[in-house]
Image (cartoon, rainbow, N blue to C red; front, side, top):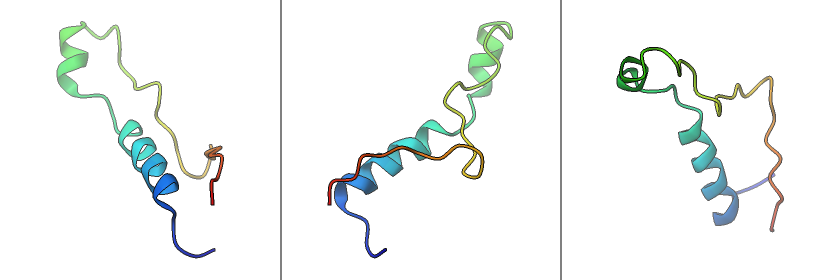
Length: 54
């Protein structure tokens, strides 16, 4: 298990950005109809299924 390939690094970066919380402005603007981010993920509970190109 050595270095990450550029393919894997790009996919992991995208998933990291998706896993952030929803901005508070969105919650306020929609009058709390959308409160949580559907892409939220915990690294222990849900593993990523990346097809590896090595």
